[in-house]
Image (cartoon, rainbow over all chains, first blue to last red; front, top):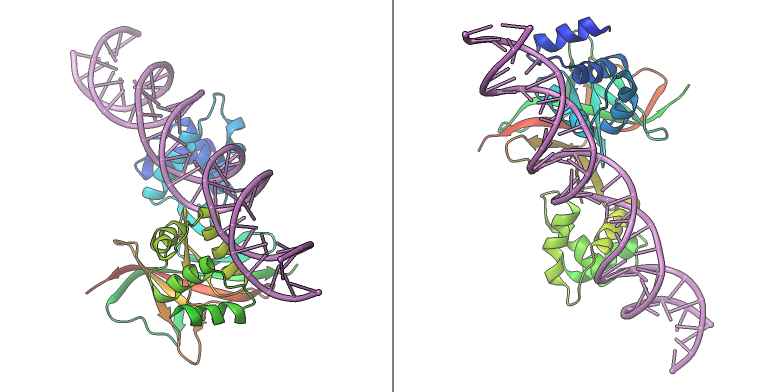
Amino acid sequence: MNRTTVEELLMEYGIQPTAQRCVVTGYLLETDCHPTAEEVMRAVKDRLPCSLSRATVYNTLKLLVDKGLLQELSTEPGQTRYDANTGHHHHFVDRESGRIYDLEVDGEGIWISGFELPAEYKADHFKITFYGKVES
Amino acid sequence: MNRTTVEELLMEYGIQPTAQRCVVTGYLLETDCHPTAEEVMRAVKDRLPCSLSRATVYNTLKLLVDKGLLQELSTEPGQTRYDANTGHHHHFVDRESGRIYDLEVDGEGIWISGFELPAEYKADHFKITFYGKVES
DNA sequence: GTCTGTAATTAGAATAAGTCTAAATACAGA
DNA sequence: TCTGTATTTAGACTTATTCTAATTACAGAC
């Protein structure tokens, strides 16, 4: 996704599209590896003519999460990862590599049976995380 | 659960039952609030005639996880919580209070339909986390 | 175009969660 | 009781994240 499109996207979400925000958002949209803030930092700092502060990366990520452009993932302790796939989807964690794969849900949605959520538990969202190994 | 029973439990799991370990394990077994390491620390330090080091709490929690007596939970960033309920179960996170509730699965187990895990993804485990609000 | 006030960014300090280290202590088995 | 290993300890260290106060950029008024 090129600069202009990212800019438009940010504006649609009511976010002032600064150079830093464009570059962070652009990176997250083009990658599928669910980076941490530090990984975003490293990947993105060379794309900017100026310096990039850690605080800006954290601020931007938080803003994008608040505005619904990004999802925060906590699949393993001490690591917050970010996912630009904001549709309802689930995750598969490869135990060996630590890699997280997106699992898309198609049209009809997902059904969980053999299990009843008690009446007073009003859920607006759920996510399923699978753990295992991807054979190649 | 009294001291002796916890002691026996630890021994069954091949863990040398020191006073510190008994007290940490005992607390986790009696509570259902999925405490963090720091919360365990606070709750438990007065039950011991001697001092209790942070390192011991962390070591003990890690040991209990390794030996399968405890489950590690990462439902929100920056917070590792511990759960002595090691059966296969799921969680409900109350967005307002942050409280985590266990959701037990009965006999037949759980079925997910409308969704197919690709053949090369070999999962040995999965967990479902619901988010919402508990009405009382 | 210039001014002005707000919003964004910056470097670096501060905090919080967790790990490491080296020394002291406790404990099981000879 | 002795001895070697396992456990615990306090505190230093690391890593992830947040805060702070000063600087810079930018949108809208003129």
